[in-house]
Length: 201
Image 1 (spheres, rainbow, N blue to C red):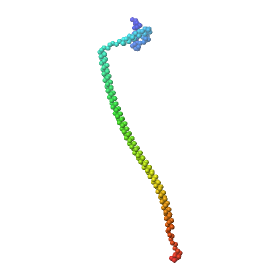
Image 2: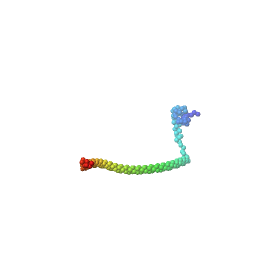
Image 3: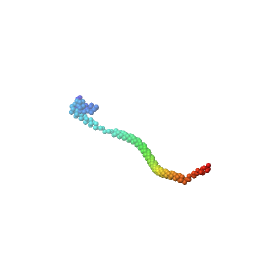
């Protein structure tokens, strides 16, 4: 029995579609038809395939009910799993938050302690500096007083030296005057007369 041109194009399109999408050139070569016949009947074949694919049989109610139950069970299981993961994540987050809050509290306490220690050290150093400044001022005043006393002592020593030298000069002058006076008032020893020496002999 000889197949018509349409049947040959349909058969070629079915055979080619098992491996790849049929085209006008591949159908024309496989069916041995003209380019115009291959184009026209391949178009009809495609339209019939599309029409056959669009006809979907009505789903039985039992299948729909089972599908609904299956979807509900899947949804319930998925919700339970999601809630479990959420609870676990929330617990981890709560633990991390607690640890972070404790760490922040420790850092704040350390910062407060460091600030208090710094303030105490600054106050101590400030008091020590003030005390040293007072001591330095007192020492400076004492040094100035000592220098003034030294200057006064040097001046007094110089004056005393001058007075001593003057006194020594006066004493020397007085001694010389005294000696000269003694020489003037002391009588000379009497000389013996020659006759007296002879009479004594």
